[in-house]
Structures are given as structure tokens and as C-alpha cells.
Length: 262
Length: 74
Image (cartoon, rainbow over all chains, first blue to last red; front, side, top):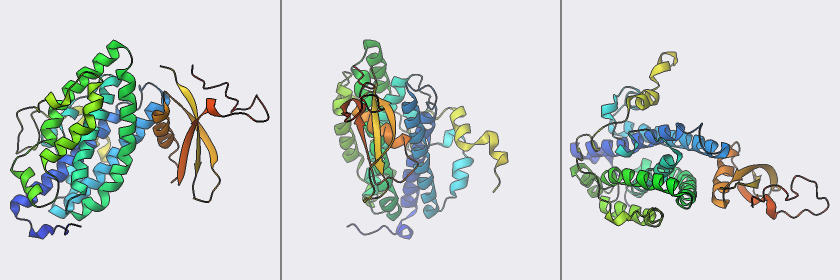
């Protein structure tokens, strides 16, 4: 077993990189939860609505656990969760907008949620104790997300040409920002690999492509030929753009924040 | 796309009897697994399983809830 990471032993670059890694995972989880929550009503069946409702809760619970890790690197989780503008979110760009149809959220469940799980798997295998102890339970819960995603993806891919076309277009749109996020290989990402906190972006991207290859092929998408988006912003730890304002207001709880008694 | 009825059975502890706790409608077995787990999540189940209602063979009566007439889906 790898020796545990001593956070006080990290230099400034290392601390910043660990903050960024935790934050991008937490923000992506939180936005994934918001996108699932958009489908509590309007899913194809009551059971599907209950499932995405539960998955939204899973994602928010995972995000809460990840935000809590920020204390270890000198940040106050409450401020991070409730006081940042949309421009400061480091979530994967594929979750910036709403999904207008069920094929879209199924594509996100398959393409985006899986990428976050692969990133978390790398994190859980590293030297950071909180990730080692807390992330495996998240990944166990994510197995049900992946099962549902695969079942629905196959089902839509085998249905009408219109439905398959929607799924194909959604998949094609989501993959480039996801590959840019998972495959980020800038200074901060390399610092985390060097410190043994997570796995290399190359290794994680290979794992991800292996997991998605057969499913994507069902809608004539060759995942090995999809290129990541350009325009990676290493300072913002994401590609261009940011989540829509309405989603971030819901994330922060702006509308009813005054009622919160602390 | 046609949904089938799947009955859900679970037990809280290893030694408990497996009990019928409800049902879900699903398009296939994989969806039924997830729907059951996500719908009946009020307990920390030791074990849960689903079975297509159409695969249940009635023994002593043909008009019971598990008679198989519902949920064939085909």
C-alpha cells in the first residue's frame, strides 16, 4: 500500500493543485446532481424519475463529502459551496447547460457521470487518505448509475432512428469537453500525479475510452477518433464558459438562503 | 418499448426470510435492478433481488397477485 500523503509536506504548487483537484470533482458532482434533478418530473416512467431523483441525492452527497475535504487544504467549504459566482465553478463543461430531452440526460449519465467516476477511481487509488477512505463508497453507489446508463443507452440506441439520432448528437456534443477535462495534463495535473495523489490523465483517459467504446459504437461514434475540446484554461481548471446562472442559483440555494438558520 | 412487472424481494439481515417488498415496472432486467434499489431504499438491505412476475409459477391458485397474467409484456 502506498504511503499516505502528508499534506503539510506539499509546497504551494502542490496545495493549489490538490485544492483544484478536489474542487473540480466536487463541482462536477454537484452539477451532475442538478442535471439529474431536472428530470425528477418528466422522465419516461415513475421508476425512472425515482431513480434519477435518488441519483441526484447521491451526487449531492458525494459533492458534500468532497467539499468537506477542502478543509484539509485550508479552504472553508461553506463559503465555497454557497458564495461563488458561476464563473468560479470548475465543473466539467459538459454540464454547463440543461438537457432538453431524455436521450440527452441518458447520454450525460453515460458519458459524463462515467468520466467523473473514472477520475474518482484514480483519486481513490492515490495517497490522500480522505480519498482512499471516502471515495470507494461513492464508486459503489455509482455502479447503479452506470448500470442504468448502459441499460437506457442500449435501449435508445436500438429504438427509433430519431431517438438514436438524438443520442448520437448528445454523445458527440458531450465527449469533447469531457475528454478535455479528464485528459487535462497541465502543471497542476502533473503535480498531483507526481505526488501520487491520482493517476495520470493518459491512464484515466484510456480507462474511460475502454469503458465507453462499445456503447458509443452503438450510435456510430468511434470514441478513439473523438478529440478533446481545445481552449483548456489552466487557471480556471476547465474549458471555456461556465454553468448557467439558474443552475448555480439552485446550487447555492440563493432563493431561500435567508431562511437557513445556522 | 414495453415494460414488464418485476417483483422485488429483500431481507435486512443475513438470517432473515426473503420478503416481498413491492414491485417495479421496467423495460429490462438491468433497469429493474436499479429501479428496485433506488425505489425501495428506505432500509439498509443485506440482500435484494428482482424477478419477472411472468416467471413466477402459481401453485394453488390462478387469481393471486403473482398469477403471471400481469407483466408478460409481450
